[in-house]
Image (cartoon, rainbow, N blue to C red):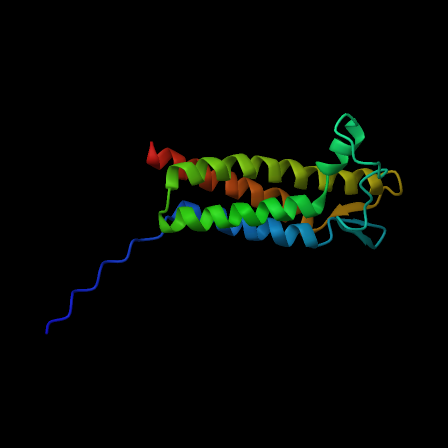
Length: 157
């Protein structure tokens, strides 16, 4: 009995792999120190978000508090990583890349606001403020994800 010839493997989409690498870089950046102030490191967990207020839909502060959370950024980044993997293997590429692009914009907003909060916290304290690798990864990771998903969409249309 003859064996069936093996099915050729579908090549990975390189731009989707680049988006996945950007998601991993963003995850690393969210947990690394963001800013150094006089030898003291500030990360997303050491910088306060704001005053915690009771949950209410009409309360603007609650919505602002929700949109500036690192844990939400990490959760969305994990979703983007899953979407990038699905794009890389070629499953539902057009819809997945579009959704990945939208979520990447949200992740970029959240991580950028996290870096800006650390900067606003550190700059009034001292003039000796330097950015760490975490801040660079928080900004470069989403840009790589954006480039990857845009390239995937451009190749599909």
